[in-house]
Length: 314
Figure (cartoon, rainbow, N blue to C red):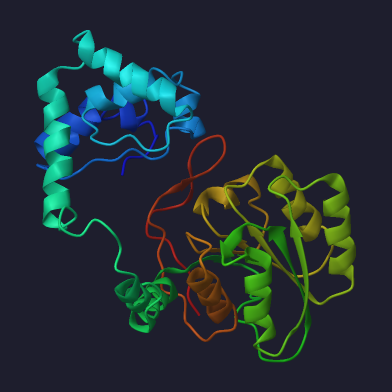
């Protein structure tokens, strides 16, 4: 699955990777020798729609070497655009046949022509299987990264304290949310927890309420997810409350670049139940954080804030 990211060193045109022939064909197919199925990320995402209109992105992706087009913002527009591009020769029938071949080949390998439907009985044994969940938990335990612990707040002792859990409150599983799931994990460790989830862009009223709740407790745990200015304002206000703040970027480790004064920061790279459980384990010292940054986090204005491979452990 491709990403709508720009990689100037490989695709100098500045086109998103999904629509870049030098990346999809030149790098992935020819240089790396990948002959499997290439699927776009959702074409309705901003990385695609902000660059190309809905009748252009699907055709550009197909011409670049992609085989399947995922979730175009307007399905009939995308379908007609691709159909017309083949009819007028912009996309050759040979190029179309290459993608059809890879799709059919994968279906044959998976036995989908003989058994096109999911085996419900077997699915219940596989989806959420205990050994699968255990493997996933082991992975997130090893990859959760402690990036800053300047105030020595972590690891937390088992002493009872009042903790506020707040931040952008995305859904994680079966109707649960980030704040609720993380609160339950912390509560299971003998802590008194207040939960206050915010919107993706916390309003001034939400920020004020979070600060008021922080004043009533001993510690704040705040999560951000692909942080924006409003989420940074929330973190900044909580830091100014005078309470110890543990900040976790639960998707993008770069969140810290917008608020470098924060003394305690972790990255989980995801907000699945397993990732949030690992966050609690690391916070309470049940797991010695061994995850390392898989990227370099640049400083605003230039330079390096945290280098590739950076980590802090206990």
